[in-house]
Amino acid sequence: MKHPSSQAVFAHWNERRGARAAPERADIDPAAIRRALGDTIILAADFVESWRFRLAGTRVCALFNREIKGEPLAALWREEDQKTLAALTETIASEHIGAVMGVVGRAEDGAEADLEMLMLPLAHTGHARIRGLGVLAPLSPPYWLGSKPVTELRLTALRHIGPELDGFGAGLTLAPAQAGMESMPERQDGGRRRHGFVVYNGGLEVPPEKVG
Image (cartoon, rainbow, N blue to C red):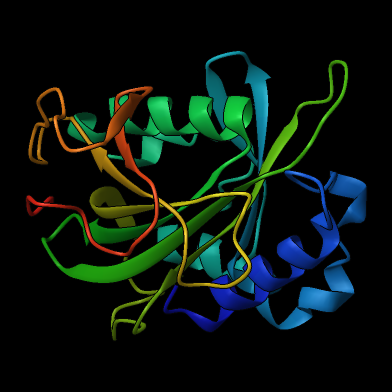
């Protein structure tokens, strides 16, 4: 994680979960991450396969020049990445893992900004709809931020954050087998396939192939 808001939100989430796979929504203290709130998002599953923004910070909404509360998460992404996002949200919800993503935000005139997106699971019971906590923030705010909206997000990198993490650098690596990123065959090197991703235990690099 490169962005200070991602680091702050992850650290709070990690602290509040304790020995559990994920904390509950009620465990998250906005005051503890107040400096990151402008970059923070909360995601809800209104339907089984549809995640929407329940809340979006002021700086997140400024990227799109509008309030995005209630909008589907997938609608912000280019078509080629929507299947990857659907598989990712399913994995986050069912297996209580998180992800940090490299993202490019593109304006209608072709201007681009490098963003970072963090998605972390929140535990839920019964029919509770809140599913995720995260961050969406530019690594370096573009000069045009606020004057024109980001109209499309493009996934450029994806790293899994497992519940076993003790710090920012460990965990698993996921390689999306989707259009726009290198397709991965059945593995012979110890990787295992999970919901359309190839998962490698330990280490920071994907062996032996370069992905994305």
